[in-house]
Image (cartoon, rainbow over the protein chains, first blue to last red):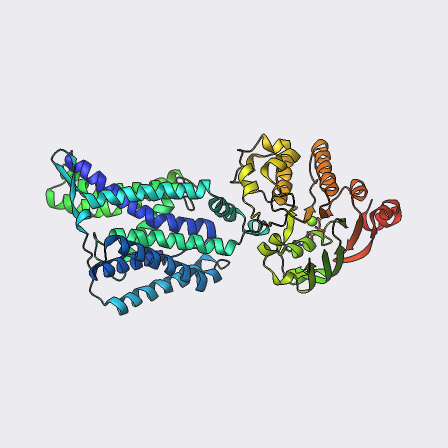
Length: 302
Length: 233
Ligand SMILES: Nc1ncnc2c1ncn2[C@@H]1O[C@H](COP(=O)(O)OP(=O)(O)OP(=O)(O)O)[C@@H](O)[C@H]1O
Ligand SMILES: [Mg+2]
């Protein structure tokens, strides 16, 4: 039971991190009709910049701020220099170009930081544990990630549903030409959305840096999960991204934690473990198949 | 206020406009006439920057519009009610109205939600409805109201009364008349020639991408021959 609570929290933590990544990706995909494979690179930039700052003795808050700014700036540059020219191209061209960007970013980080992964120390006030139940400690930092994810979700909801900028983003998603004819500078709006997405990805990168190794290519493994999330959630929907991310986080974490035990009833212990290992790494894809079978356009088609 | 000179434009390999000339003075209501497919909407698309001119010039208030992106043209004060209406389906009525970039400090009597609701009381009953839940007539009212929200100095109406029930159509005409009384400059395309010629000051008649006749609207109203020849009425 205790293990279950702990694993559910782990699942939520992974889920909220995936949400930070997928919110931007789904907006860019839904609003601008652009497939951006390089989204994971902003995650990597966030992680590297924060880890480097901390290694050089910066405080956590400053490292976070600089990393967010760096990720947003990278996003803005990528949008203005590269992607802006690809909106009217088909998806294959976008995939090729943004794949090229992945190579560029990965190679650049190797040139700047070398091949050795970095590790980021948590500041003391975040590395404590809290008792979620009497006698059950849980790392504070993972709870912080959950809290941050919730705050971002609320913030994005307010931005998109209740602000004028959000109105324009939604309007532009359905009719680009008409929103321009109402005096709205849609190019600038797209740059803004893109930079915001990059910033959130960078945020996820900072959050992830103390938990995983910070290394070149770290964005790609998580990018696949992120695409699964936005397909499950429905492309273009931030609400869908939230639900999809939590589902994927929970299914992945709980599958890995509990499938071996469940299967031990059916097989002997060593084959149970190997079957469980392969099943649990398939878990989220099975989830995706299931969701798409019932709702072909995802949970919340935009 | 608005002057088109020798505007050429088209889609792909075909030329749709072959040298359109048109002039609209401040405070005037000018109508662009012609049978289906003669290039009326294409002319408007060129003015709004939805379609690039191949050659020629479009000057609004001394600015060459061909040098400006679409959003800048709107900000100069050109409001557009497109033939297809283009209501944002996923936005509520109120959001459709608020989405416009209504800066233009120049407007003496800026349009507000309250004022457009006075003009179209039916919209007020529907503020929270999504754009795609409206009837055709309501969508048309919303398209006009939305164009007003940018505080235009020139309003361009493309077939604003098309496909509507007679009562609704009358209401739209009433509003256009009211806007004219307020001194708004209007460029209007419509199929209802009779009402149109009573409303408009001057007309331009298009045939195959060129202006073949222009003058006082009242003259054309009396010239059955010209109407029969170019408008088939
Ligand atoms: N997007 C487009 N692509 C290709 N051809 C087009 C396009 N839009 C219009 N045309 C063609 O351009 C010509 C002029 O069309 P336009 O819409 O300007 O006519 P119109 O005078 O507004 O007619 P209507 O009274 O039917 O609205 C027509 O022959 C039409 O087929
Ligand atoms: Mg037309």
